[in-house]
Length: 308
Ligand code: TXA
Ligand code: MG
Image (cartoon, rainbow, N blue to C red):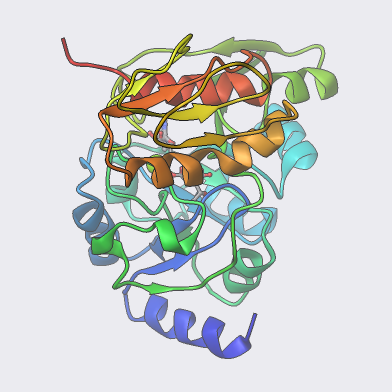
């Protein structure tokens, strides 16, 4: 990555503008987390309700400690999984300059250190954290490549870092006295946490009231039909593994060799491609409900949710 591009991004961020940048999970749309009008811009361009808080990205744990109170279990998770796809919900300390609009005036803020060279290089050259939700219009699919950006977001300055390595968003976690609560399933799996912390009691919160856990979310424009056992005449197919499913129009296989990491990497990109094809809807093959498959199924359930 050219320093010239990073310099341009820095210039814009310092002056309160937005920048789209890569992370290992999905692309983020970032701004100076201490700047109220910049934070406001993000909510506006994403059409995101102010009740749904943004997460903050940091270069290292020292910068996080300047703004937040970390408990013992926060340190344990942080040292095991940062930099990486873990977002920890932390309590602000009295010195924190992070704008309160970012967290709906609450004291709890989602924080993470992304595992992406460009993101880390940019963050380490700034003297403020980056507030950055996923670079999509609210409730639509996240994007894992610059080409998939919504037309309205394409005009924002962007750093192209190729296709996101992991492809699913970070796992949002709040530690408890006995372990941790998963507020949003993500790229860090429950199994990975259990391997390192067998003593942790892990709860998965599935409340639709929790921000970002709306029933309808992560959604393409076309209707989605999950756990499909057949494909209708006018449907396209998002397939997984080897089976007899077949679409007359178009099929894409998330991973023909049944590798869930490969499936995660392809997930949003394939959904976005299928969404542009003339068809009555997208049929999706069953995905195994463990590891990253659990996160894919969570996204598919929300994407296919109907209001009635
Ligand atoms: O992988 C990711 O997390 C990406 C990349 C860009 O870092 N970012 C991302 O941000 O997915 P966003 O805003 O699209 O999703 C953040 C999630 C939302 O579901 C939000 O409701 C939840 O985190 N969240 C943020 N702050 C929270 C808080 N204080 N309490 C509970 N949930 C929170
Ligand atoms: Mg999002």
